[in-house]
Image (cartoon, rainbow, N blue to C red; front, side, top):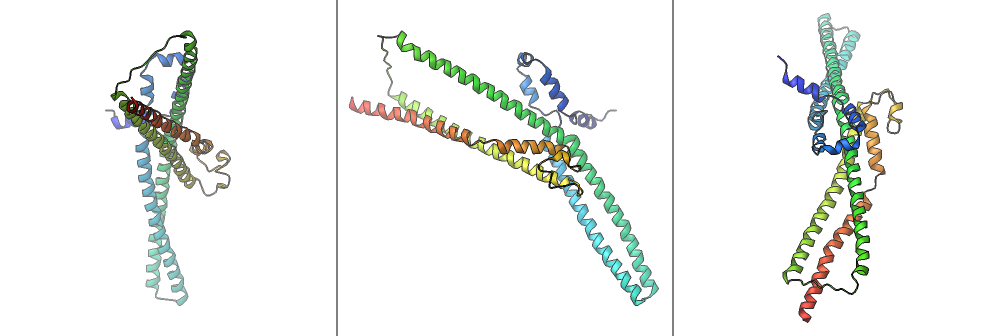
Amino acid sequence: MMNPVALFRSASSRSSSSRFLVKSSTPRDEGLESSSDFFDESCMCSGSHQSTLDRLYAWEKKLYQEVRAGERIRIAYEKKCKQLRNQDVKGEDPSSVEKTRAAIRDMQTQMKVSIHSVEAVSKRIETLRDEELQPQLLELVQGLSRMWNAMAEGHQLQKRTLDEAKILLAGMPSKLSGTKKYTVMTPSLPQRLARSASNLEMELRNWRACFDSWIVSQRSYVQALTGWLLRCVRSDADKSKIPFSPRRSSGAPPIFTICIQWSRFLDTTCEAPVLEGLDFFAAGVGSLYAQQLREDSRKNLGG
């Protein structure tokens, strides 16, 4: 009987790179034929990222405990060795010396078991890092890239539509020369417009705050991942070259390249103009209909 858990893990541990290459090689029109493709791609095919991080944390905690236990055994072992040397120098009773030697042999066995446990836990962490975390990060970065490309295309289309509308509106007065249109505004309409503008301004400022928080969180996440990966690098690697060229470092894992490139991209990306533009847009929306409301109020008082 097939184990469903094993089946799920084998299916979820596949790398997303092959799936991305297959999708990127298909014509663009095919991706537009089905509106469900975008929602299907929103689920990570390389497994749950949160679950992988939770298990990595649990194994890292286990590794920390094993290292601490091994360190305590090593300290006790060194004390026993020192005690044995003192006993040999002083010529103490052979039974006491033999008892100390037996304790040393027992500690040597414990140290071997501790080293084996540390190596086993470290191997498990490396397996999770390379077989699950790496394809998940690759899929995440590729998904973010597709998202920003789609948003950029949408914004360009919106701008083109607005530019065409401006041209159309600019040509309307000449065609409608000699005609005048008057709009009768009910007393409650200015209040509704001002209230709608206020709500839109609030949503824009909330959007701005969420965008700022998202970028900051993304930078912090990449920095935390990179810092953790640095601890995974073997001690014989040249750590001075790792932050700049991970491929030249024999001890750097392949996943390090993804995090370094991701971190560099975020460092070179300046979100300040976007945030300032959102602030300016929100302030303009908030003041536009408020000014219109004041003008209408003055007209009503004057009338």
